[in-house]
Amino acid sequence: MAASGTPASAVPPEYGPALRALAAELRALPPSCGPVRLVAVDGHAGSGKTTFAGRLSAALDGAPVVHLDDLATHAEPFGWTERLREQVLEPLAAGRGAAYRVYDWTLRRFDGTAPVPAAPVVLVEGVGAGRRAVRPWLARVIWMELDAGAARLRGERRDGPELADFWADWARAESAHFAADPSRPHAATRVDGVTGRITPGTVGEPSTSP
Image (cartoon, rainbow, N blue to C red; front, side):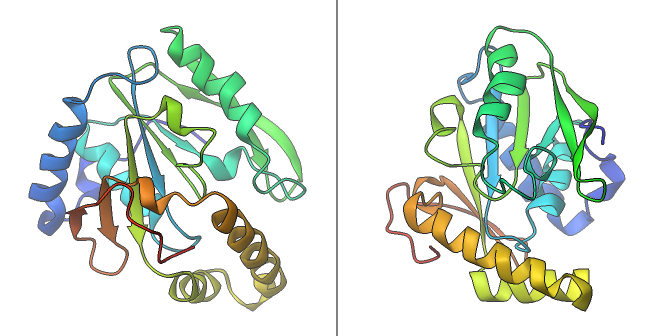
């Protein structure tokens, strides 16, 4: 899976002004990972992270997107921290382009690689992108504002009944993760998972979406 973002045509006109404003704000942040401003897009599974990251990438002229689903595995849904650090964060921090191995969820093994250029802004999207171990490298945490139940229902409708067992297992793992290591209180930007509306967050606000 390439990490080069999505074409500008993927941004619906109604989202354009707010996304352009957010893109300008992110570009103006101090670099956080070598020359890169690393931005996390976090939220519950099914909350719209991948869609929003694609739109934001387009507004950033094709900013690279690291998809954490490519680094997670069946056995370790949240055990990707070291892979992210070694394959992505450390090379970017040194001013080099990075590349990470991509997990194939059908073959159940890593197969292929995805490049991550040392662009001015690089997005990391996925559940737990704003976790404690990653935050020292981040310029901004963006949180998709959709509660766990609504996000899960959306995901189950998208994936169909054949993945119902997977969603049940995932929901337990996700709940445990956010209970121990919440990202939402650290998000300076919130995005409504239903309307797509972008609003400033209040860093340090207690989490109501554990």
